[in-house]
Length: 202
Image (cartoon, rainbow, N blue to C red; front, side, top):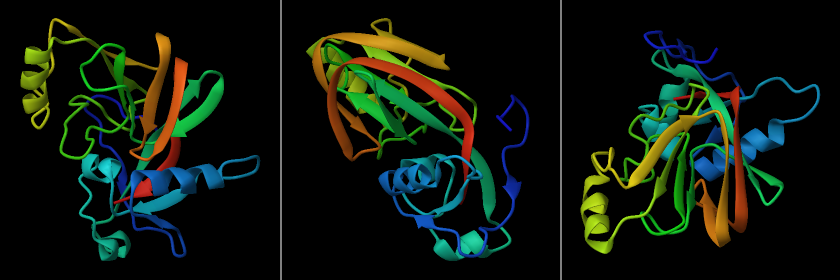
């Protein structure tokens, strides 16, 4: 069930026996995509690394997944249609260079490495968090220094919103990086969210 304000998120429940374990966002993405298709139930995957794991407070300890403190939570899958081709992602999509012209940050998780790019983002709320805009070079230096604490937002030159779907058109083909590893280029980015698409255990 999609998280509601003030409600509990997930249940204390260990990883099912024989379930796969992912050690990165990209590995989690591949496991989720491999499980999709007609007649397939929502997959449950253990998670011990990556930015989504950090967002969920995961300890990175594989033994925890089968113990009494294991937490099972539903996760939204974000779908980026890039020039008409669907490319799902679990944590984040970065367009261009941060805070420069034509950049966009789309967050399903809160973190990208040590950068708190989505301070309000939640992977089970049915939304993705988007930041766009452009900063002058002096402002970029300040904003980058604030990324560790998420205090680069709010900013009058940055447009931040939480959406279930949105289309962004760029004036030229832009480099895009999904889940830290998948790299593509495109001019049109259409986003949508599939709520509660799979479960992870941390």
